[in-house]
Length: 200
Image 1 (cartoon, rainbow, N blue to C red):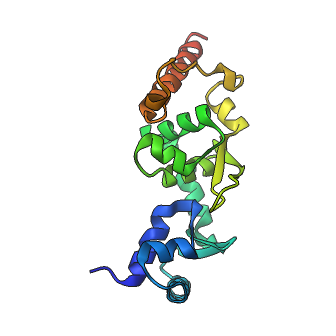
Image 2: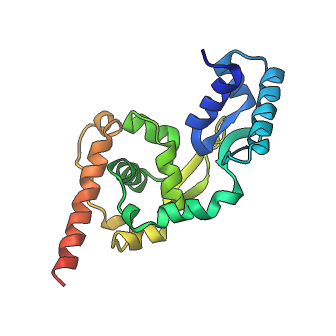
């Protein structure tokens, strides 16, 4: 059976860079807020005292999230710079396509379109400078809004966002819950650009 601290740790992990507020954690676990605060402090101390742990707990704007310690920043950068990892995974491409077509957009909206969690993909795309924060939505929790970057345009050989192929004119209900459609249209443009490059 999972311990109380494990439950909080798991929630912070799946929440990604958006993090969770004290109220969020209390509601999801059924724990009282003072108890949650104590357990968050204990978890943070556990990471801090463990020299073999790469994790830390950050508290920003009354929200808590897991992050990696500054000491491992170099090796994490090497991970994203490694030649064998230059190609984006299908999941990363799907998230990137959704951001490209729907920006600015929140993680929750992306999750609803894909039907799965997208936090880790968003973090990877942000580190690779393909997407960036575009402010926060003015609603409870102040969720982060994401947009593509100028580097995104350069990376995929796009002149501007209008260069992306238009989405098919189908029912909006189907469109908003079909991440494959965004990826299909996005891939169409990528293949077009690849063909142009091969012909040079």
